Image 1 (cartoon, helix red, strand yellow):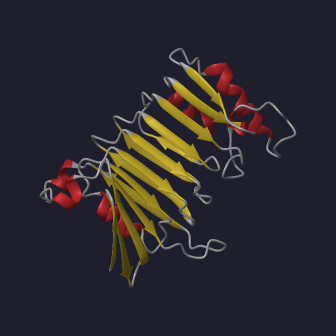
Image 2 (cartoon, helix red, strand yellow; image 1 turned 90 degrees about the horizontal axis):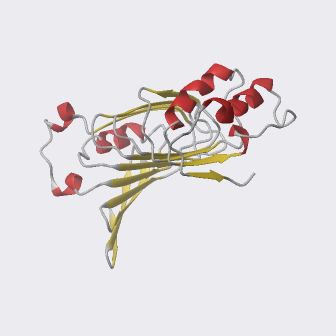
Length: 237
């Protein structure tokens, strides 16, 4: 283990035989960054990942400690098939976690995130192989997604204050149908701030090989009836 310290920020570097190199940064405002060593990005091993947060049954077996009770914002970067179980185990002990960011996880093909109580914000960026995303969260208020559009499986129609869908590369699978977009429309319908990028709103029939993609895009404006919407942001195309 290597240790580095600067004002208000502490950095650790761990060497693990199973997970490789792990860099941890403890930042102000109860933030923890965990950066796992990335494997071959050109040909990564695909894996599924399950995260369970704030489960009272799990937390009852673990008394809060200074190392777990302070984390409210967690960034998980470059998790792979070797480190996903270790990451899930760590996350399950953070009983006060409110903000979760998952970034740059190559090989991640399916993901399930469950939070029974406190998770307020979820960000998933740049996981290029993600095809299936399941979310169960009662109190989610912010959902930011950037990447190919996956098969989206929310268990609840969230009352989102801020939603972003940046799927300018189109859907993650070739069998995408109009009905696959319905769950997303229900999820974003109460958003106060909504950011859309390219594919989710364009009406260009020549942009994608799949004819259904454009039909799904048309539904955003035709069926959502975003009565609570305060701000619409159109991302760069």
